[in-house]
Length: 93
Image (cartoon, rainbow, N blue to C red):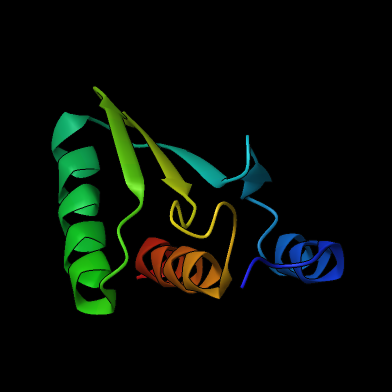
């Protein structure tokens, strides 16, 4: 089920580093170098595979952009907020 406006507001209050893109949650992160960016992406891949929900990932040298939406639902769902929260936990570890 697609999240309603209040659910999105609650999410963004809890995770202000995420923004709203075109029907998706977006997080841009800059790392020290390419190796650090790739190590992070590999951790995201493991979590995403375990959850069975995969964000779109763009890598530009030391910058990583993550985009989460549930394409078959046509918008942002609880699955997207769960993967975003897991990504935030990776950032803190």
